[in-house]
Length: 219
Ligand code: FNR
Image (cartoon, rainbow, N blue to C red; front, side, top):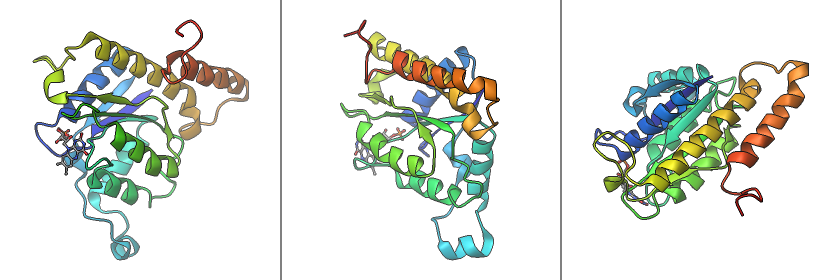
């Protein structure tokens, strides 16, 4: 199963780029094939309805659309700007949403964020869910927000704090299982015989891995 991954930051020293690199390495260990991009590969103008009508998607948005379509799932590390989604990412989501068939529809998405602040960008992730879900993406319930991102990584790009690293490992493993289970929604029709098994796998992936609703063994 192929996962397209990028950090929605254009900064060369991006903390979110470090985070997506680490999450990508982990997802590969859990069996996913990773397509890791830099956000600069998709530079595009601000959305303009007249341009859209006259010429369709600009080059950067077309490249982004193709990379999304080439994968069954996405992982996106998103900086928090003023408690919300960066305008650059919202603009990219808006342009890509004009393509048909809708590229986001049915694709599993895992959201991560880091910031130097003690909350690690979680407020921006809640805002990021809204347009993605509006476009039909299936956003994984767990979101990974890493506080103090400026000191959290060691020189090898690993997390210094064991508890944070263990949480990331658990969430990435859960996401890969979830994305495999929901892959037929975007990428191939499920064979009739598989449908029931997949429904059970989706429920199990959510229940086993989610921290939101821990099972009785953990409470
Ligand atoms: C920020 N930053 C920030 N951090 C935060 O925790 N909450 C916030 O609301 C904001 N708002 C904000 C707005 C703008 C315009 C900028 C430029 C920055 C700080 C931000 O988290 C920090 O610069 C991160 O390092 C950005 O992510 P990358 O580029 O390192 O991945």
